[in-house]
Amino acid sequence: MPWNSKDYPASMKNLTSEVRGKAIDIANALLDEGYEEGRAIAIATAQAEKWAERRHKPVKQGEEQ
Image (cartoon, rainbow, N blue to C red; front, side):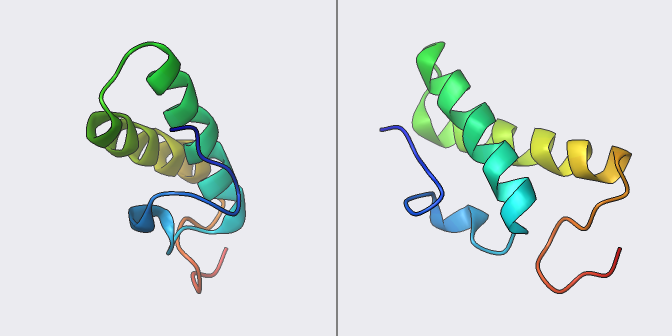
């Protein structure tokens, strides 16, 4: 099931919209590659968080830059 900015896994709800968008893109790509949904979510979330941290962007809602 591909996700989008309005329909995404509950585990991504506390991510900033920018990081969530990145995680959704990664998760959808992983699904296309044949990963199981749960594994795709976990990998995508971790990679999106790393992406944000490398760019000094807040990861979770309410965090300061």
